[in-house]
Image (cartoon, rainbow, N blue to C red; front, side):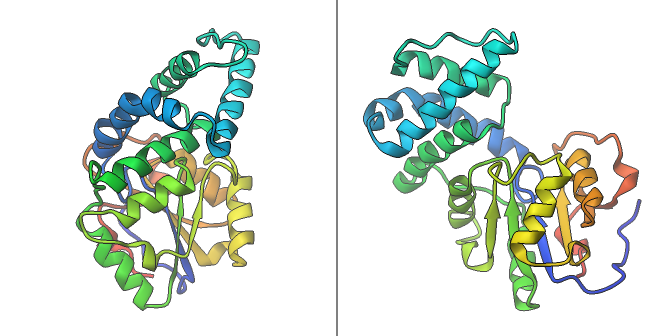
Length: 247
C-alpha cells in the first residue's frame, strides 16, 4: 500500500525504535553484545545498590514463573548470586525476551557504555530532520519501545545526529503494557491526554500496529533495510522514510 494522505492534522506521533528510528543491526550487533559482555562485571560492581537489587528481585520472580511454565531456565541460587543471575540474563537474551527487569538492567549497563564513550547510537538519516520538523510544526513526539525508558533516553541523547531528546516529550516502555496489547495504547493516549485518532503510531511490526489500530490510533508500517517481513502489511499504510509522513 502506498502512503496515504491523512484525513486531518495530527496532534502527536508515537515512534517505535528498533527497525523504525534505529537499524535493527545496531540493536542486535552492538547494544545486545555489549550488555552480554558487561553484565557480570556490572552486577559485581553494583550488586548492593537498590535499583539493581530491584532488577534482581524482578528476575528472580520471572525465573520462578518460567519454571512454573516448564520453560527450563537456568536455576538460580538461594539467595541469588551474580553467577546464576548472569546465566539467567544471558538465557533471557537468547530468548529475545522483552520483560521489564531484563530491559531495566540492560539500560543501566548501556548507561555506563554511553558515559564512557564506548557506545554511540544510530538513527536512520531521515529521523533527526523529521523529528526536528515535526517539533517545529508543534506536533508532540513520544517514544514507545520494549527497551527501558532509561535506554530510550540514552539512545536519543547520544545519536550520530546529535542529542534529540530536546524534541521528545514522553517515553513509554513495558511498564505501560505489552506492545501487542491494545490496552497499552489506550493507556498511552490517556497519559498524553489526547484523542486516539489524533495520534499516529509508526512501527516496523504489524502486530504492534494492529494493536494500536484496535485502540483507535492511526498507523503506518515502517519498512527499513534489514527489517523482517510483516504478515499483515496491507492493513497499514507503508512508508520507507519519515519524509513520507506529512502530518
